[in-house]
Amino acid sequence: MSSAVAFPAVKPNSRSYEPGTYPSNTFESLDGTKTHLRYGNKRVNATLTLGFQNISDSDAALILANYENVNADWDYVTFNGGHATAGVTNASLLSYLKESGSSLKWRYLKPPKVTNVYPGISNVTCSFVACLDAP
Image (cartoon, rainbow, N blue to C red; front, side, top):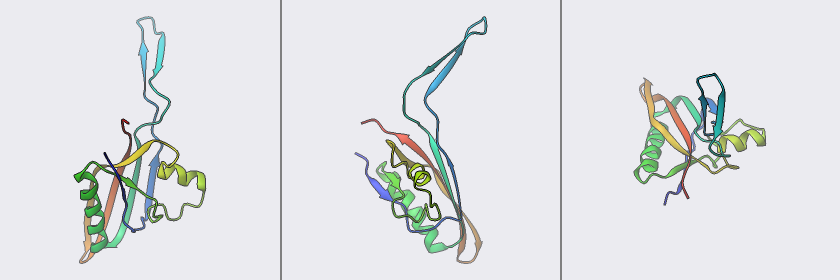
């Protein structure tokens, strides 16, 4: 059973969010008629990318440790501490970013990318995908 793992208390400099899509498929017949099948009423594959510029190597290590911790047991990430969503003042947008009103759970889409820019200073990019887990 997966469990929630809080994202570290590091504030991003940039944030990019896509709400995902509804599972569906469009079929086109030989005469051009299209039939659209929707397979569910819940969004899937929402994405969130967080960019951290000029953070300390110790903060970068916290993010890497979180990645290892989450993926070791197939857990999921939560952003309830407020650091990853700092600066978002609209409650509705904040709900989307946290996916708190949905059944989606944030997981790492790929490993965090760490770029060393100066001794002791790094840039980190984290990409997440929101998955709809089976009950």
